[in-house]
Image (tube, rainbow, N blue to C red):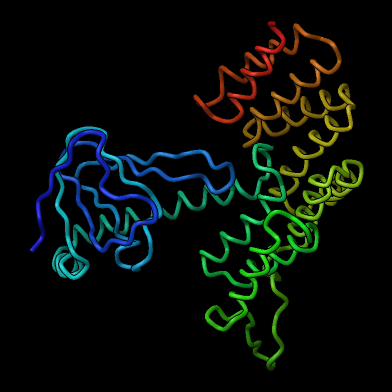
Length: 324
């Protein structure tokens, strides 16, 4: 039978990595699901509303918890076994609808994480780590072809990298039969190239990101410019435009960097890396010796960024350095 359970504020329902087949519905109180962003490592928080359930995916899938469930204030909830939960869902259409809604929200969260990861726009996580994380993500999503493509790319560019041994092991695991790699085409038995689901533009983008990570800024700049000039993929064109600005900054072409990012902001006023672009404009003014303008841009970043976000911390540190 389902059990009513009570938790005090600041207690933990379960930790990330726990293996537990309990599913919970929140009766009252406040619970937060805390997990790390797959690109930046920053801790994220999803609040559970009264009447919502949590822990469903890992319990039903019988794999470790993906988040830590933290009680923010005294809370009561009902704990179900998987069998009890399945029985109730089958008998109650409203709960089934709620379950679909929760899964939809979780899918949106994953989609946002992947978009953030593929942007590679925040230099808090270096491109080497970003490329390895892409491979890990696709493995978890059971997209073996993309995973192996990304991991092989990693070993190509970072044969002695900090994740080289782990990447090799993951490739062997993916190719070991538990996660089939090749697809049979309608014409015969020819297997598709791992990663072939990625567009040529995407591959060019990751090649340029890898060059950037190796501090080959001129070569990276050329690669990103080719993507922009081709104008084939609007999403990657916008990403490459942002990376062009970062290349100019690292090449110490500060005036060109300022002009480029100013143009970028005008062209893409809702660019996902808008705040980061403003930060680089500030850093370019700092590099050019224009301290007052640099301070103005850092203050703008601080006014726009989320509290305790990586870019917020960077802007505060840069501003503090100019005010000493």
